[in-house]
Image 1 (cartoon, one colour):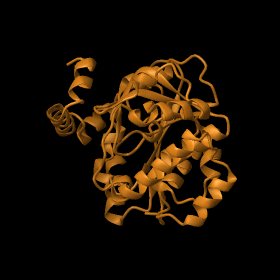
Image 2: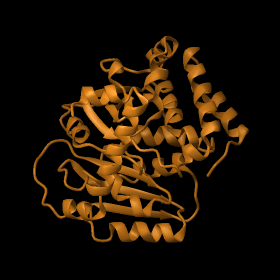
Image 3: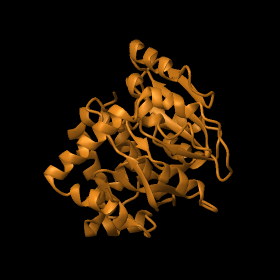
Length: 302
């Protein structure tokens, strides 16, 4: 099935149902713990750019193999850093069991207290040893095309987050390809409706410069905006002069776990996202006054 046909199917209700069935089949027969173990046992070879992968984990121990698929047998992946954000003991035990027989490139860290997605992603990136890091949600699967595209970049810019062109099966970011998304262009594409339609600004799973991303997350400490954490970090990043760019041909599988923080705080998360879109429209910065207002609002943590 071609990429064009899949994107066309995603526009209809029955097509979406068909694609969701395809994802379920992939998860049932291909993306399995046994297959991950076989992938991890393969010897690696090849050169090119190497990077870390940072995963924030919460109560998905038995499903962590979904995020690890394609990572352990790719020569550009130097390590996978997993930060457990205070999962329930049984869930953390599942996580430990899931990675016990996998390569030593997996580095697992445990936090007893749950502090939310924003803090956990920041810690996972900060603990990474590579200059560049793929921030990957624990319920998604990155395709090799995405890993290959970034590894092939000649000189990625330290002021840029690099994004996939497509979050399979429903989010097509191709209309933004070739546009350098900084705060000014985000304002223009929000006013035109393009940025809202593509949703890339809050979808996550980007390649980021470790130090720049860490600094952006730390500047947001105490905001508690975990339901819309990706968009908030991007907003702060762009306010500081950073930008985002799409890698043509790169893709990943986007799942949305029913137990995810976004789903459990969906109404509030949507409200936060709409508020930030409004600020983009007006070309307002994510400055210290805005961050102070978020802190004083005391929004929900997990």
